[in-house]
Image 1 (cartoon, rainbow, N blue to C red):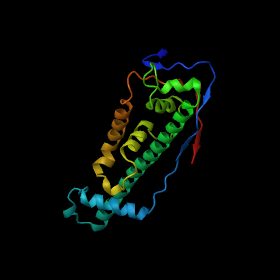
Image 2: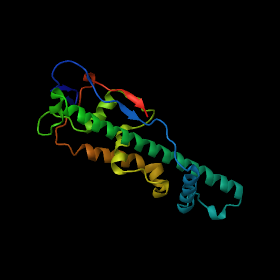
Image 3: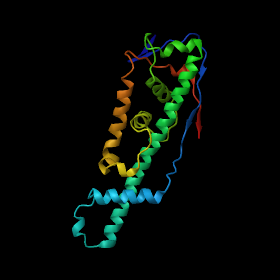
Image 4: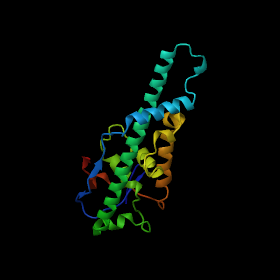
Length: 203
């Protein structure tokens, strides 16, 4: 076992670099029925009373414009959430493929066994992607996996409050990931990034 700073790394026999399955990711997002999503966002604006003093608003065109801007902002936040969810789905599928790969290779098979120490847990694969500096274009991988663990499918925007979309989603996604990562028997060691090759392909 190698220890660098506060990180422990599993030991892998030999010195060759192992090729892992490619990570297939969604880099673009196309929501179906954007008009329906906008209508739902407008409903959140109305239902949450997001414009203070709306009842006494004298300038109707300005009021409607303000409502539209808030609805657009909500949709943008929702799109970020769904994009994170899609990345989470892609990363979990990649981890499943990696587990199959490890099981089929005698020199890697022991790394995922929780009854051996040191061992790597499933969250170690997310850490490996971060260590390999996989380009994510602003996607927080831990938050992405947390969202996928929380939601089997992306809920419609109407399921969320404005408070969730604006303020709470970061903490919910990251907390879900940390809870998932902690389910592995301790201590869990990291996978040495220099021993693995990861190719990222756009779906």
